[in-house]
Length: 276
Image (cartoon, rainbow, N blue to C red):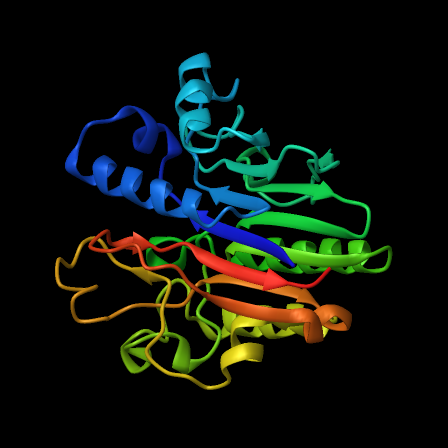
């Protein structure tokens, strides 16, 4: 049984080095993730420098995950500094080849460290931090281009071997995937365009592992906004973090669920267990 965890940490840098109240909550989540003894841990929004983790970052990361190797990609010029970024940790003993695909995406999206993959003997693991359409949907057109290119990329991998793709996809697919659909049809992450793009992605031969296991279960989310202090208490959330897998291995999925991050708002980690 293979075990995977994915988490948008909203700054690995802060989680490792800060002593703020929020950083301490993040550290508690890292400690909890470590107890799962996952084979692979995918992290989004690392916000590390262009040159990657410092020696201090590595030392602190190893204090949580001592028996893991890791690969990373950071935002580089002309993209903003300390922006986005992704990382994959994988257990020592696993053999993997790092892939950093360039999709040909618009604007600086290909330079923001949003996409990293590892090729293993019998599958690909793809970690993505999908661009947000932004305030006023100012980046929706570019986001749609990203979605199409990303779907084509996963499809190209799927022709070679099975794919497990995870991360923050920045879209709630169906009305059941957020607490307040009626008031969010023109909000980033729940536009008709973004939802249709996700439908199109699944249509290329992929399965949303959470819905495959749980069907139309309600009120289960992976993200609660930080700006509203009661969002998590009231479970006013969105499900925007996913493990999707090639259709041909969907019957091997054994578990797909959220990991409780306690009082910490924003994203919660997600878990996949699958026979490979």
